[in-house]
Image (cartoon, rainbow, N blue to C red; front, side, top):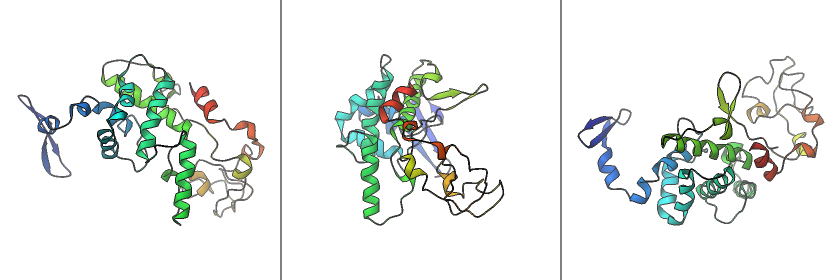
Length: 248
């Protein structure tokens, strides 16, 4: 990036061409240029994760074509909002990225998309589905904090999607059960092995989705096989509201 008086150029090395950022900015709708920071953070940046297969262009076009969504974007610039307000506004935006304007919760939307993919006889992987409510809450809090940081306001990371482990901050993981415990116990991987190193990589279907191996798996005494899941009951899985409340 170089400065030439009031003109800014950006050299895209991979594409091997130069972009006149100033001209690009001048040609954009002012309603969008004043909200570009929030759009950038919500769709993924250095400190905020990117919703799978949802790029910046998609969110930008959704906000551009639906002016009624600007009020939700503005929440991320407001210095006097609660985490609940951030979550409510951000959830509307993320749901629209997945094409939803009718469902009230992420779980309803996840179920709808899952059924559509099954009806189309397509393979379904977890990353293809929208995030759970618990995971989305943390994503939105990190996005809000990043926008505020860009605006010169410092916030406590511990209150906005980050956890201090004694040495550094890591992303807070929003916990929710993938499915009822009775169903989770029936999940299994096809790994073959009798040593502790079995199921130690992401090749293992259970480990890949963050689950432990169970007695239904082909592996035996692997390092991903613990007793916690077998002792899990329905009370261990928070509801959506409980998950958001506890994370706060």
